[in-house]
Length: 279
Image 1: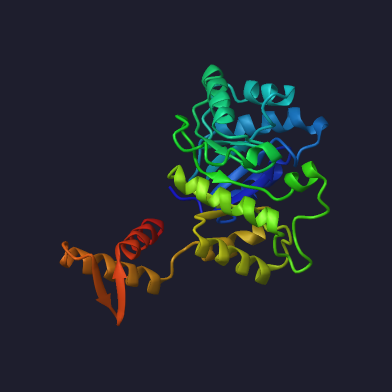
Image 2: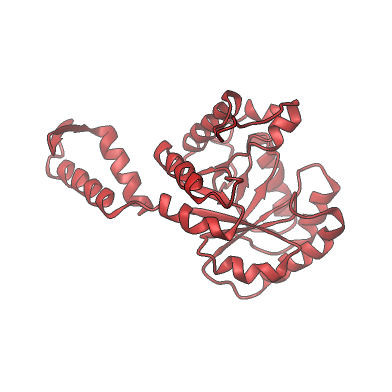
């Protein structure tokens, strides 16, 4: 399944779980990390474990744990022992070695789940974005963030005044996109923090879909419908893609064809097939 929208929900707010599940999001990211204060983490672990043990609906349930190497991470995995979330979200991931480390820990804790790394939150992580391909671990995708990294290097901000990313973070975004596709997995765009700015969100999400991201994370239920629309191909796009596939099926030996007065070749066929897979 391709997740268009992945909605963060604080793990210590079980009163929000049902509303989040009704938001239309394809997946919920039940958070044990940044959204939960240290004093609230034991209650959050218990609430998430209860939810995962209960009968499941159609919405995928992911869990963001605390970073590897911390006591908090060990406590998170102990609380999830024997459970099967749809993915474990790994913050501050640093390439293939980090997901192999977590995979071993998941096996030891009898947690049956692929891993979704947040892959740009430390300076060292940037140099490992190509190492997820062939890492030998089941991955649910690759995503990135533009909050922890500037803090880690002492940058004043990751965005210009108009909301655009500055050059270093555009680079991190692009490397995540290519790293995900190199590993043949979903590329998931980061959050849009101004949750009341739906016009800005729409432009941001559509740009992400245009660039090759397959979904996006959300921080508020009100963002979900806009994100879903941006990552759902239109009827016109689907019809055009079908015509491209049909044209090549009718001429299997052709390297290039004409369609609607334009030349199409192998890359257009690949794009068409990817779009139809999303639809």
